[in-house]
Image 1 (cartoon, helix red, strand yellow):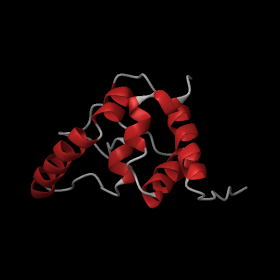
Image 2 (tube, rainbow, N blue to C red):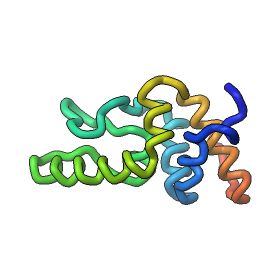
Image 3 (cartoon, rainbow, N blue to C red):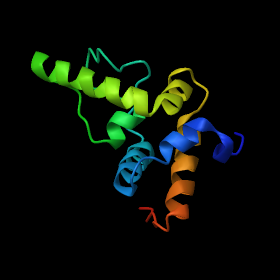
Image 4 (spheres, rainbow, N blue to C red):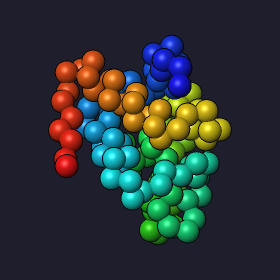
Length: 117
């Protein structure tokens, strides 16, 4: 991976606050959740959320009313985090790239990540 600092997706990731970054990081480290690609508007068949939706704390919709709300939220987030989402959806970045970038941002913000063993 090239240094993420020069990447536009990295700039989008920097928009997340510490809690959001930690939420994303914990999902990555847990290893039991697979982030979805291209699942922004119709997350059919289970829990399909991209890293940004997870970071923001959104859950997959369970009703049609929540589906409409999810889609509206997705449109807003897609516009705000366009570079990150494109890099993720098109496979330009990996989970490992995201993990390293999140750790770098947290370190720059003097937020310590306690690793559980």
